Length: 109
Length: 114
Image (cartoon, rainbow over all chains, first blue to last red):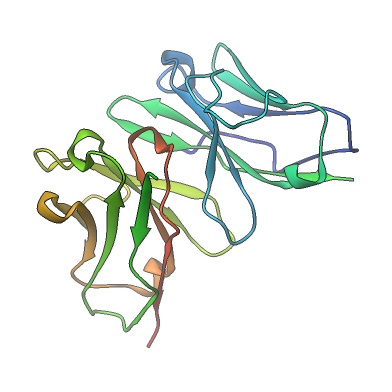
């Protein structure tokens, strides 16, 4: 399976919004509702931010939201804060396996 | 508190064998699969495979099938990732995570160098 495609980088000023795309195929993103997003700060383990396309685990701010259209999923971070600066990865169920995205580095200007 | 605690960093030579561990606590270990994820230096996340601790049923990514082995010992709530013959290209950080990837271990750094 090929990795899902994400833009290498995205940026925004504090208080602004940034949206990250995650493009797959009908065999992964487009075929299932099981798209997740993870935040990873340097030297840290990833943290689940969104699951099942648009659900937030307890403790994740509602500034983080997810959506999906066809074979592309998106993560939007509203009201950017300094601590949002990190790498973000999407993942999708792909049959009996799971596949990750290529990752996007979000910079808060 | 639900947590996964992984074994410490390893430095090995090519051709050597290795087993790293991931111990779960704070929940019923046999109720959730354990997934393993590789992150090579400066690179992204790669799904390696998963194991069901209740019956040791495994699924491997085609990219890792035949090169690593997943196992568990449910009596001590521990999952394992094993190599029989390491390569330099196995140098990476390895994470375990609970089904749903909602809980992650802290990662184990594996360095393979002659």
